[in-house]
Image 1 (spheres, rainbow, N blue to C red):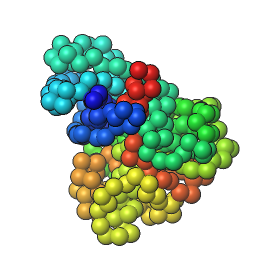
Image 2 (image 1 turned 120 degrees about the vertical axis):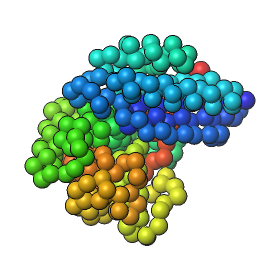
Image 3 (image 1 turned 90 degrees about the vertical axis):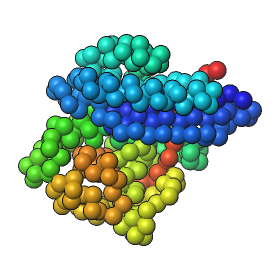
Image 4 (image 1 turned 180 degrees about the vertical axis):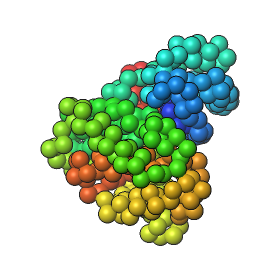
Length: 310
């Protein structure tokens, strides 16, 4: 049986997914790991420089991922997103990673990232016969894709993400009213500047995936049920439910305050306000009343793309 290990090197976290491919082309998950790492968050303007400390942590994580992939006898493919593709020292970073781990890092552009996320969503949810808007809010960028029965209308990557905007507007992770207003204004302009996004489009389903939106789902459903959700795939939440959670988060001015909110992920309490503000504006712009969650995203898309092009 063929085994594949996909590494998604995001701005906020690295994900490893190891699968075994069955004869019919489907796969079963053998192992998965997630480690928080904030690439580009310590030095330079925006996400312009990956620091030595961030590079060393990345190398340590990737070395561990490769060891796990070797344990399963899985071929490893690593894809890097916005923080690496934008870094001034990306070539040095990639060379150091290869020298220390033997892993070749593939930098994928924003449109390709959006398309791979859609591949993952197609595997997780019955969307192939629907017109679907896909939303992925990451640490460094936000991917937006509209597809009708598999045919892509637009696929865009916008330079707004939870880590990026936290660094710009909330560097100490504390919320001040002026900074929140400035962040909202920045998000609004960043989305409006992209002329390929068509807010007049209607669609059957809005699907959200990855960190910020999964965190929003966890907050909403924890508030409703008082329990932590075990799986988010197929869950949904409404705009009014989301706005209630957003109000709670914005009222909690420090990470310590936000940790006390039911359903809050400890390692996301610092950057969650920026991520939720991005989601708020997207839901308003596209007039989204409800979002459905896909647990599959970029890493699953990497595997499916590899199988499709074998």
